[in-house]
Image (tube, rainbow, N blue to C red):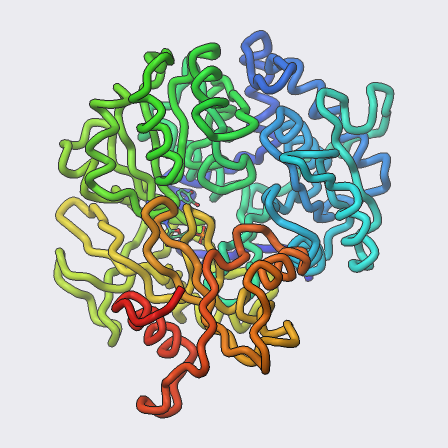
Length: 537
Ligand code: AMP
Ligand code: DBH
């Protein structure tokens, strides 16, 4: 199944005519960047410090290695790497060889990686040797045994070029079309399994180029990659890709916690970074204790989940930098508060869209526009929002309107100037500290357990995570032990963040009064019962 992302011709023409789609590929952008910024520092991480020239050399080495494996232009390669400089040489090396990276998070495990690889018909998988106490090669071997297209596993050891220094191969001369797919992002999965999000060179680079000035990112900036580098937010809003586009410095943080990030900020003079709300709270708490020099930090971006106004108000006084709220999605649309916005906008909204050509609709249940200030469903289309997921007609029928608007599933209020406040969502997923967990996907796993008769997974408010997951389970006979059930879930080869935070055993779902209900109504009823204090933890 070929990877593609197509806009109707008249819209494509408009996006080109307005200069949004610049007709440049990643490979062309990098060639220019490396020629112009050769002696400047490009990326720092672990023991590595690479100038742009050195990054360029490593990109070519990685590209040659992939070509030498026999990979063909257009082949897909799943990349699962932590925040290391090699993240950039591998990703851009793949692009240099006209291959397409598919980004997985370090937290994903064999079930998820196999799903991405199968869905993308990937020819290779790139993993780290070890990260966060986990050995990736054995997992990669399991995935390879399961996915017939996966011919190669490439293991990255810190500092070493992935294929050694001596590898030689002729790199493709022809560049790809800027309207072709440059990379594949993964959706958080609002229903069922994660979907693949193909992004083109034109659209992704536009979102990055347009983000840079909005976020104050220029050649003198130093961007700290605190969140997982593969995530769309730290990759493109404007993220480490934005830093590369600007000729700035990327600083890779092996972990986002203050003990690791604060010393890096001081040592590297970090000027900008992005966090999810729970991490921002941790940083606020740690900064209060003092003993760190965060004076270089100019902009703290917070996004991925709703940052409450009370916490938002603390950023400037306690961290001494400007807060920027970021409300984005791997499917496209990204909203930012602007750096010079008044305090109430910065703390009370999740920003406004990047582009004058982002079309943003806020609609009631019947599909009619609501008045400004009223809550409604957010739909969008524009020059960097996808028109379809890869190879998933059923999901596409649900997620896109016939005229190509993406149904974000978010419920928002719009204010004058186009500022949005995220109020909630219409789809059943748990936004667990920015990680989106599909209720349906977790239920499917639970239902595979022999002592589980039925399961419904809901989100509950959580002081630290924002939301946590709670599984209501009707046991089949004797209920399993909670700890045993959680351990069994982990054994399913899924990311730890998908294991329910809380499990509540119930005799039935007590929905008889309502009659036959949808899973959605069932989840809502159970959630309401729990919040009303009727549940037993
Ligand atoms: P995904 O589609 O997996 O990339 O996740 C994007 C979703 O994350 C959005 O549709 C929102 O539901 C949520 N999200 C991202 N940023 C914010 C934010 N600043 N405030 C509230 N929700 C957010
Ligand atoms: O949550 C997200 O997916 C997200 C948040 C902020 C995102 O994709 C982005 C910015 O680009």
